Image (cartoon, rainbow over all chains, first blue to last red; front, top):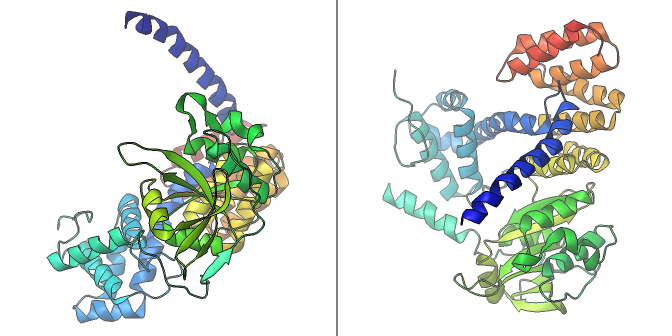
Length: 139
Length: 302
């Protein structure tokens, strides 16, 4: 055990130096630039929001929302107020549902509409079904 | 309420087990005849599977040639991350997929799929890579290039059991000109970003263009295109990409920041200053980066 500890120190120093050598020149040659990885992270929240809004804009979903006494405009406004992480989380939840996967949104089954409507009413605070929907305390 | 959550959770678990009905995009049977077969040596299923898909994609390699990169002798196996990075280092887009439906759709679109099976049990795993080269929904079989058997016929049930224990992990190895049938914008751009990381700039440029052909207004793909040209030192093409991004997204500072940097390096001081100030004005979470760019440009020559 002691031998391992004694050996570990020089090895880890060596590794640190190696890693520095790998990352430093790569980074410095891109000074001033926003990397694609950052861009991808930054745009993800916006894309998720657009995806959610696209769903709310669907006629079948709107009909179901109105039937529940919910104004689709309010639903859209609430989507805007989600943080990036929340919007991504919700979009992922919907995408994981069967038949909801395609970004083109083929046929949304009756089941999926129930799910989406409940999700939106959850965001609006009318219902409290999904644990992953963060509640915004009323101000 | 309990009914709703029950319904949803049961759907979730059925999702990957379900074998879909044939549709227009999913013919009842499909077989790929252009995927070469390399019989594997002991424990070399990783290199063999990867070599088959790489060769299919137009990169001629033997399993032996890539074994040092892919295979970890102490594990007597190949890690998924090593499979991915080896494909990227050869300028191929490595695109992970998951689940039976995606796998079948990709095969129907003509793309062989590497899959990770656990041929043993959860507590006694026997990991194995194979390549799906066909299926027949009517007969309920999957065709695999696996081990020493070319076009091995496996029943859906056995296939499902062994793949479920591998978490339904699948991998496409595609030329960057070819979009996966089940691609989503985010996942595809992430996969192309992997080519940037492997410093395969030309392949990355081709991949971003493939993404943009499908999602014309993808900001991340447009940024990636500009960044890849920049990395190659092709400042004019980089400028064109960032300019297009600023045109499409006039309220996003990222593209203005990179445009400023590229203009500056071309000696276009005034234009660079304007773009950098614009980025700072637009603000956002990256505003500190934009300020730094502006400051550098104000200092004078690069």
